[in-house]
Length: 272
Image (cartoon, rainbow, N blue to C red; front, side):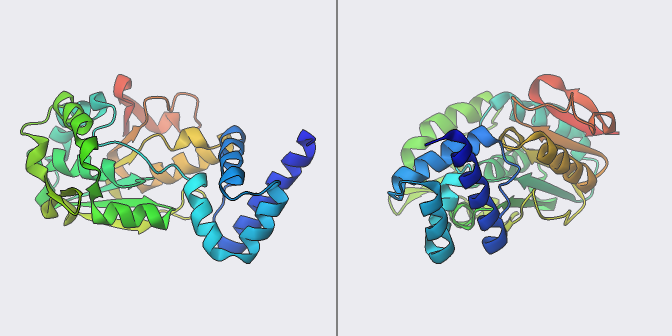
């Protein structure tokens, strides 16, 4: 099919999703969305994007399934251990000066990062006075995150990353085997509130001391990146901290002047 026709079809599909379900993927990276839609076409056995659009409009349950393709769901506990080590060594001493803490994990996927942060804060004696908001646009991901249950075989890699991130105990102390998987400790879950939030369409909902928004901005076009960074900046208290993914940077953003690079290699910034 002619590429220009495909582009028109893709634009109409994204418009239809926004108008019908209020999820806005129109400013997501075009290459990323095209790749995901190609996979969805195969999965749903649709020959064209127009056919997929027709089904999306008429079958709400299909849209719920399509969200799995349009959103990034999989992360790992202590992914990029240098990030967590820098949080522990550089950011935590600042956080210890606050009587209570609020932290936002934006784009939490299946919850692995929120639980990783909870473990760091527990080991640093901060979890009891911390509330972690973990948000995502995918309700299925949020349900998985709330359950806090993952495949047991993943914990070999999780444990190694935890060690490299400066873990003070054994990761095995934080989960138990149940229902054929590994369930994370209740004391971690108690500190986390999982809820729906879109960086594309929703506004700031709380003032926080740390925002961790990692490997999310790379899926946005430049305009939406700037919008999202403005939202993250507005949510931070004075001298608050922003953590991005290792392939993301504030360097070329209009919001760069609002922050100092606190730990450049770990992409951790502090609001001026």
